[in-house]
Amino acid sequence: MKSPSAVLLAHFAGYLLQFRGSLISELVARGYETTVIVPGLTSKLAASLAERGAKSQNISLDRTGLNPFADAAYRKSLRAKLLEIQPDVVIAYGIKPIVHGIPVASKTGCLIRAPLFAGLGGLVRPTGMRQRIMGTLARPMFARSLRASTHVATQNIDDADFLSNRFPRDLPGAPIVTEGSGVDLSHFELAPLPTRPMVLMTARLVVEKGIWDFIDAAKLVRSRNPEVRFVIAGFFESRVGAASKEEFLA
Image 1 (tube, helix red, strand yellow):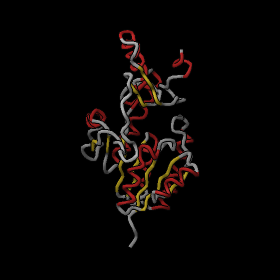
Image 2 (cartoon, rainbow, N blue to C red):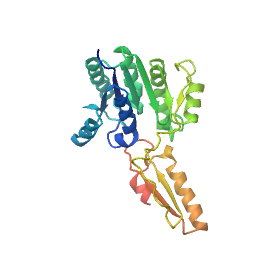
Image 3 (cartoon, rainbow, N blue to C red):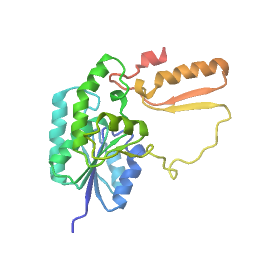
Image 4 (cartoon, rainbow, N blue to C red):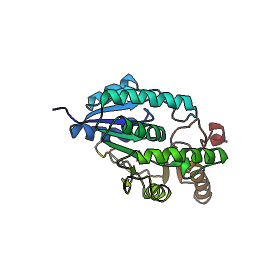
């Protein structure tokens, strides 16, 4: 008897194992022949996934680009891969894998199709006219993806409420709320607190993550207590709504 199979559609290889490593291991542990399809797949990442018992495939995807021809090529390539794998389950996270991948999975006969919204970003909190226009254009694609889903998961109650209020007729049911990605305490060990007060923000340097709010708060607190240290752990993006290095260091 053929083992059940699962495909995880990811949009970025850089922090795949940090955020989704436990999910991949859990799918494998439950007997799913698991394949990760992700752009930018490296031999090192492929080897790490193989150690967890998962297969991997590279795919071309510009996760922040606006080229419709590139997105069409992604859908075509993804369709070919899913037809070959014939998965029973497809889980997608990242906007493009969700809006393109879930409808493709539906058309290729996958039984369980679940988008995981780690955040809704500019769709909920657009920054500037261009992102508002993009959000307006993306909503029909979101609706189509939700209609093609069998389950929907979000990582916070605000996003679940937004989807329920904005797309009530498109959802397959009430969103599942995971309250974050969780922390693997067997990997991230407890460390002693620093002797000097410190506030740490871990996020990509984009407006919707609250990067400028964090900096404004840091200035306010440090004007009253210069001993408090504020640290940001993240990276710069090259897309609409991203903080430029020049702005950040000014």
